[in-house]
Amino acid sequence: MAESVTTKLKALRTRAGLSMGQVAKHLGLRGASSYQRYEDGALYKKPHLPVPMVRKLLDIFPGRGSPPISQEEVMMLAGIDGLTVPQLMALDDQNWIWCVGEAAAGVWREAFEWPREDWTPIVLSVRDDRFPRARRAALLVRGDSMDELYPDGSYVVFVRFDEVGAKPRVGDKVVVIRRRQDLVETTVKIYTKDAGGKIWLAPRSRNPKYTALPLEGDGDREIEILGLIVSSHRLE
Image (cartoon, rainbow, N blue to C red):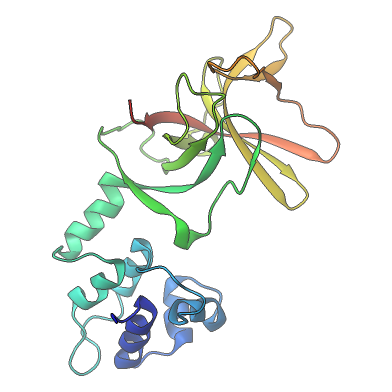
């Protein structure tokens, strides 16, 4: 049976002569207890580590230990073979973005953002130089209230309005979140206004059951237009 990624990670850390606390600090985790799960096969069951985590490990593992740890050994923790470190960084920084969660095209959906280790990379086929200072992320669309634009299983790429210094305009496709106590829900809709200036979140669906939602929250619900959708990726 092949060694698990947790076993490989623990072996490399031990060989590097680093404590779990030292590695956790470099990764930006709260402490050894936050890092420990990545070395526990009962808790971390994925076959590989997230690429951003492996990139950070490349700063501290290679060259340590006896024999010295190689960059290739560290990159294999992400399931990547045959790439140079600059290639790995270029893929992560430029050509890939991360799908960070799910959005509902229908009803509100829980779990706007997945845990970091569950983020998945998607490759962008078209270069987009708009909003150069904004971070891009993708969401997996579930549901059919936007199926004329984003069928179920599509990916939408968005930038946050607070990072681009803009406000939603009529006709924008937007990511909207609703907070209720500790629960965060999300949906994808079109930003519209009626003649009286009231803001609505409109569907674009072949299913006639969907109607526009008012933006207004109520009592214990806080609604925020989080991001502007700048592109999508879908099967025709």
